Structure formats: structure tokens, C-alpha cells
Image (cartoon, rainbow, N blue to C red):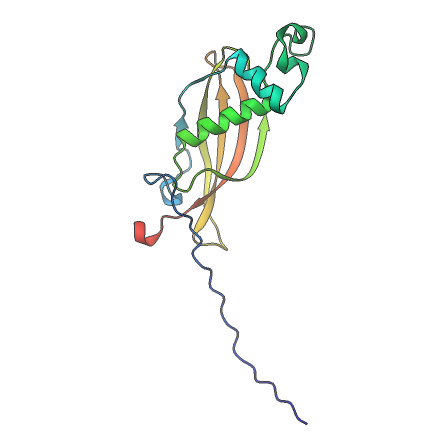
Length: 174
């Protein structure tokens, strides 16, 4: 019994277009984003009740729940959870950086240099540090966005660097 192997030429893999439908019809695509472009969000006022409500559900530590009990802690008074600040920051980012396909993060580094306090009026100031096309996925790339969450007095409550996946504008939308 003889066996013969027929060698077929390798099939070249094609990458299907995986561009998601836009969630912001008038939003920005990778082709629109350049290093140095800046964004500023609207303002967001943080109340004592909101700080306590968030902490009660997600970060139930005394310095986030009760101003009296927080007085003798590291914070010296009621302090918003860093995760609350991060959630507010995400809301402000999502409404001020109009990426066509939404804010799709791939990695993040964040710091909380000072605590969010009741009465803070926060906003986000963001700058594109890099915009890079993907070598392996031509339909997309990423941006590195640096953004600060700042209160009305200029105090930085959160400092973030994040990489966001951004798609190129599809040919049928050009």
C-alpha cells in the first residue's frame, strides 16, 4: 500500500474586518486622533450622600461611610473611595472623548494623589500621548491617553494613563 501526500500550497489567512458598529455615530476613529489632542469633560459635583451610598455598596470602610468616624483616620474626614472617583472619571471620560466605537480599555495605571471630598466639583482633562496603528490587526490600533480628574481648586484627585483600543474608520463610512 503506498501513500502519497499531496502538498497543497498554504492558505493565506485573512483577517476578517472586526470593526464594531459605532456607538457614537459622529464619533472619532483612529484616523482622527493625533498625539497632543486634548479633551475636557463637563463638571460633576460629588455629594456626601453619594460618597456614602457608593461606599455602602462597594467599599464599606469607615472613612468612606461616616464623617465623624473618619476624623481620626489617615483622611481626617469623609473621603470618597478611589473606586468611586474612578467610576466618576469613567463617566466623564465616556461623555467627553467621543470615540466612535466607545471607550474600550486594554490596560490602565492610576493613582489617587488626594481624596475626593464632599462638595468637590470634578472634571477630566485628557491628552492623547500616542496614537499607534496595529501591525497585526490593520483595522485597529490604540491610543495612550493621560488624564487627570481635577476638582474646582485644581487638586488632582486621580491621575490615569490608559491604553484604549480604537478602530479605523471603515471604508464604507469614509
